Image (cartoon, rainbow, N blue to C red; front, side, top):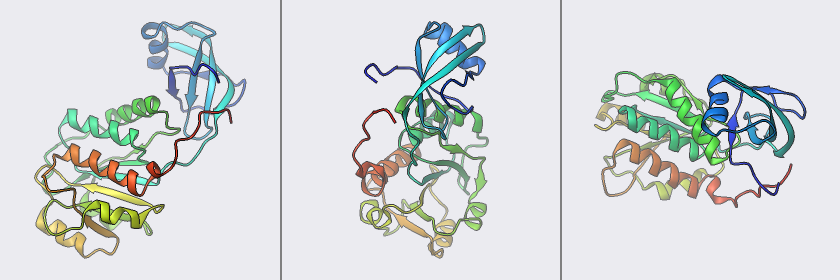
Length: 253
C-alpha cells in the first residue's frame, strides 16, 4: 500500500471484504466534522480479531457513517501477554497510564485497590476510551482489556496459574528489574505498581510469601506512580517483551 491512510479506527464489527461496517456516532462525527472526509476516501479499520483492513467511506452523514472494507493490509497477530496492574491515581495521570500502557503493548489494564490507594472512584469507560485512542494511533492490532477495579487481596487470591507477578517494590533489597526481566522472556507476566504512598508493609510481606510474586526495584530514585508504570513497562518490553523483536513491515497480508 503506497499511501497508507492516516486515519485509523477501532470497530467492534467483523471485518471482511465487501461487508459494510457502520461506525458509532462519535466516530462518524470525527470523520465528517473534524477530519472533513468524504465518501470514497480511505480509512484503516481493526477490531482485534480480523487484522487491519483498508476501507473506503461508502456513506457519511450527521451521526452515521458506512465503510466498505476493500483489502486486508495486515493479518492478525498475537501481542505480548503482559498485564499492568496498578493502584489508581488522580484523574489526569490515570488517563496517561491507560494511554501509555496501550502504546506499550499491554494486553490487560487492571486497577487495584490497595491499603494506601488514594483515588475514590475509577472511571473504567474513560480509561477504555484512552486505551482505544492510543491503540488507533500506535498501530497495534488490538485494544487492551480494561477491567473493573479489584482489591489487592482479591487479585492475589484469584491469580492464574503460570503467570508471574512482578511487584515494583520501593523499599527493601529487591533486585533491579533489568536483572529479573530476561528470565521471564516469552512467559505470561504482569507488572504491579503500587500507590503514591507505597504498599503497606503487610501487603509486601504477604506478596513475599507467594511463589508467583517477584519483587523488583526501579532504580535509586522514588518514582511517582504514573512514572513507575511507564518506566517498568518500557524496561520489561525492552528486556523480555516485543521490543526484542524487529518491527514488522507494513505489507499486504
